[in-house]
Image (cartoon, rainbow, N blue to C red; front, side, top):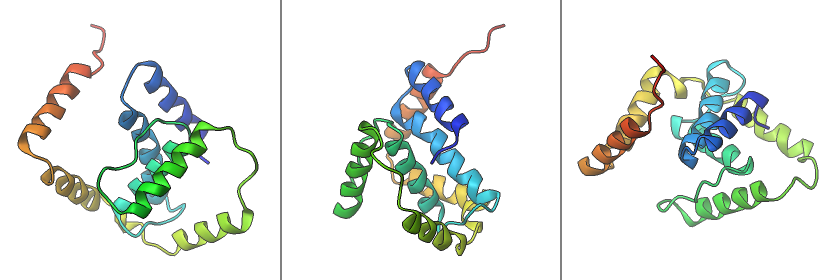
Length: 149
């Protein structure tokens, strides 16, 4: 379950008209913080990001399933999306929840070190063309919130 502050920040982003990926970023940031503070670990930076995106979809952020990736991953993303669209019917299974947490606790917190996150960002950017990177930088500059003077 995401923290209350995270949900509020994501809702603020939605009200401001920011993209679903920006809203989902709040959940990814929360997940990275959880690993950093030792709440649990992650096998890689990618896994921590994936957990955050899954939480975002389940919280109702309209984030589409990934275009690339395995069929299993796309199906899971669609299930998460459906869960976010309807109200929760019942509490999650305690056994399953505990098993997941215990499995993550055995993983390292090195996966979200400054170096690991930097490498993840660099490798993700390297898979995009220079025109895609340029377009995204221009959009960031255009949509950046300006501070009142």
